[in-house]
Length: 296
Image (cartoon, rainbow, N blue to C red; front, side, top):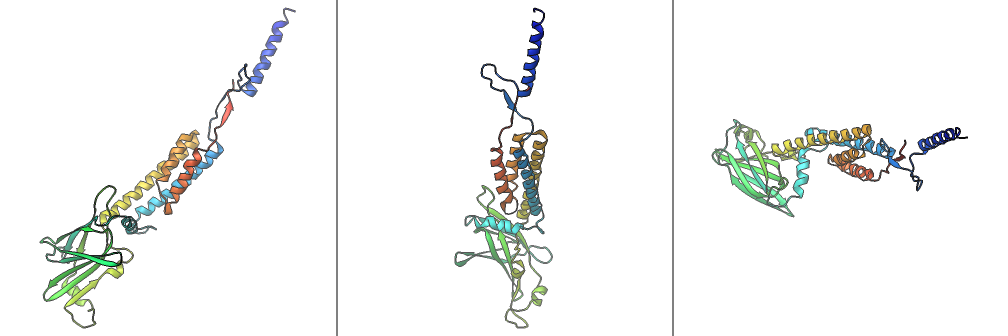
């Protein structure tokens, strides 16, 4: 009898161990099972990761659009004009140079700037200095008409253009627009038709505004900033997609959440990436925890 007792005890230990492996570690006092976080992403989190990758691609395409100002869906002038509509009045500074057909600055050219405020047109003017430079302050950002008037050899030559004045950037009090105008030669003005249909006229005009209705003249620096923003969108999209792919490989929900936040700032066409990115961020907080028993 004394020799059989240890054998029975060993069999009981084996049964207990088998049960513990099957059900996980339990507390003897309450029969509660010890749980721990499961490795890998929840199926819902995997779906969110795929959504973040798709949104990142949308943001990357939007960045390509910005980086291609001549072929994109949204052009730099449209982007600047949208910002100018929300800018306060008297916050634009317009400066630049008027050059002749040889690239030499023209002195004494009258620069007249007109823009619409409410139901009326407002204008201001100045003259170029000895270097052909001009400066106009306290203008309203947005679309303006620029008339360059030069009197020479008993003729009055007028060159008309459509320009876009840049709004203030971020926390800057003023927006600066620098444009260089090429004033045509007298021969070009002589070949231009007169407004009254006469063969010759003292007031000779060249009006470029009809061809600038869709894309007016603008500061080249503003267009360059537009391209830089596009590369920024592409960079954020690549980082966001990288976080999403890494979260799938490592099973990390925090990495997925970071990627979903970053993809919001890629904007996307018609703010699609913003909307879908915010949706992904919210969904990452709704992913249930995957708990499994702690196995021996």
